[in-house]
Length: 194
Ligand code: MN
Image 1: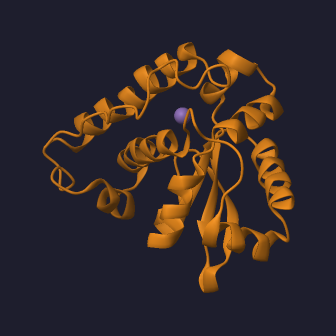
Image 2 (image 1 turned 120 degrees about the vertical axis):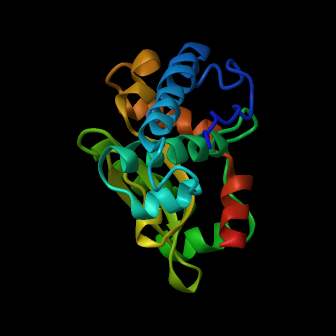
């Protein structure tokens, strides 16, 4: 079985002016595609060949894990962004954020702080905790919180390829762009299903 690059949930230029079509042409069209192609090469003829992606992430190590996790992480990330995104969450997720971080504003500051402070390549996540709480987690390289059984709600890609074309080394401006695009509807449905 071959994994396929999932289609982007919007046009390449749909996230402008926050994230450019050029960034998506590289980030989705080259980086994400490369992870899919490399994963297919690595699992051909192996025990992982017919496994669902989530199972590979749970069981594999090394290059197979890295590429499988990056395939999953990017598909998840594209869905965390929307041309109609931004603003604030509503409903149970909004309540959970307020309970865990006192206010949406404080949550946003803390998430931004952890994202911009992440050293090297990685991801920042919002995960669902016990008792309807939420927490922010950083992961390195391709790692993701699924390996620790977490329910993930939202992520921000903090690899340089996510922002270098548009914002060079300015992670803060990339985070501003991220907040303008966050798909809170998807994050809320991840929370409700989790
Ligand atoms: Mn990326």
